[in-house]
Image (cartoon, rainbow, N blue to C red; front, side, top):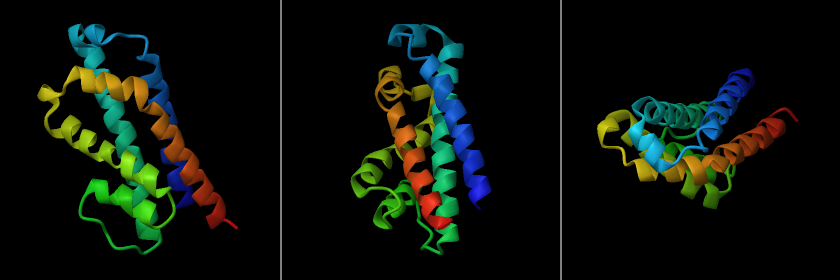
Length: 140
């Protein structure tokens, strides 16, 4: 399990690196450039998917009750002390963004996308840090 999670964390790091490279663009640039908008959407989606996948692996490994939603997957890690609860509560909203990106891509508000791009990327770094701490405890 640890190798799979580490592999997902490496993918997450790459996706976030791509997203950071798009921070130089304005919301107007993103609105005008369909390819740029698609890239931002896709890398946000993939980043969120990595986090959900990691959370599901941990839930399975720990034999925790299988959550009913992606949001609950993140909240479960908070309840179990793997993520700080306040962080899990805030970060679980990414599951809603993931669902919008997957199912309502034509209706994605570019301003909301831009906020996630410019203000929330650090959450992925925090998530990765908390998971690394968890993995360190598991190997002790």
